Image (tube, rainbow, N blue to C red):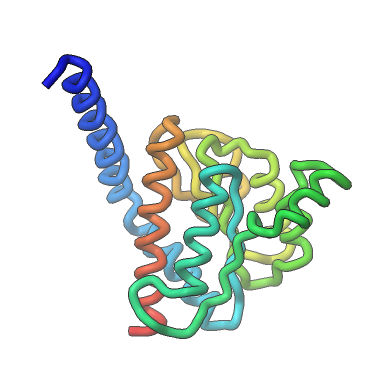
Length: 194
């Protein structure tokens, strides 16, 4: 094996170890993960919905989690009302153009959120203005607010429940977020559908 190949293999191992370490760190937030799953379960039982939003990879995570809830995770079962606010490009571009990009989520939340809904804002930096404003508007509408963030940032100040990954490394934070999201989807599905 050439020196370059050995170096690349060592980097692969390093990335995998870093990712595994952050996921292991989530064990310290196991009670919070259960609590968030319970919030979603109770909202669905009461006929409420879940709204999810974020930018870039966090937008993809919002869509991924919404898909697992509205489609299926492990079980063939009824659909759950989960909406990613990142998927309507006409709304995103119109709001950004007519108002401001910082309003793309808050404006949609204002139209959709009701008391008892759950809003999940995802930002690896914890400082995305549009995610912060989205959670602020959700709280104003009476929704329960959840933040998925990295280490630091203002997002945690705007949410009722904060899952904070102890890192500033965006890809590793995103990997931990989707792991937590998958666990939450599993717990919700198990509780509601047995």
